[in-house]
Amino acid sequence: LAIIAAYGKILPKEILDIPSRGFINVHPSLLPKYRGPSPIQAAILNGDKETGVTIMKIDEKMDHGPVLAYSKWLIADSDTYETLSKKLAELGAELLIKIIPDYISGKLKPITQDHSKATYTKIIKKEDGKINWLKSAGEIERMTRAFYPWPTAWTLWNGKVLKILETDVLIGNDKKPGVVFLEDDELAIKCGENILMIRKLQLEGGKVLSAKEFLNGHKDFIGNVLK
Image 1 (spheres, rainbow, N blue to C red):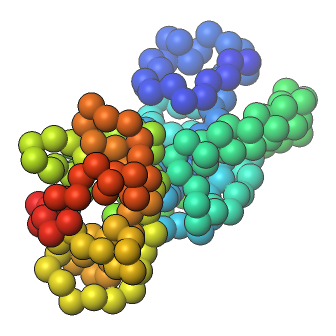
Image 2: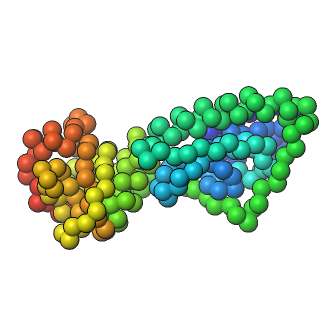
Image 3: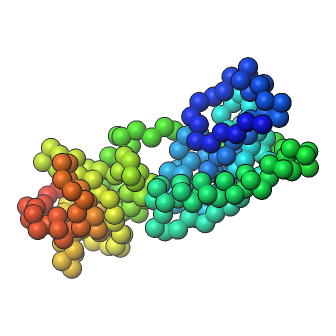
């Protein structure tokens, strides 16, 4: 029996045929939802409340093989890619250890996925983190968590990359999207819908700072309109 996890390539048949009991994979989503390389980021970006891990037999297609076991997991409102991936890795390891004896003995029978319900994820690139301030504050807040610690959600200011690392959403305000202002003495940026309250950020070449620390050194940030 061969086991893989977080392996980004399709295995050819001549490799799959080597172990007599085949290959099984630990995948961090409830297949057939979120096949592909970025299921954890996709779950956070889409605002899902629940995800999980799937253990499946591998065939020659991406995350396509029959399922051996599922385990569900609730996504916390504060979860980032970093925290959720760790939780799902531990969940997957526990499930794997639990099911291997039954799989080897033949008690556990693989179940074919419903391929008509399959959805797919993509390879995350740096440009995926670029913030469009016409999006809602909720969407951008989820970006900050889904893309942490890489590529992070980011914008440009004075020709430099400004990483937006920790945020909250505030309802309301009629300002222009992208405008930077103070809301009750706290750093805020207007979005296409609602307001993004900035808690932590990092300017290219600088340290990670709280919003207050950042404003102490960059008072001219207020009033800018981010693109």
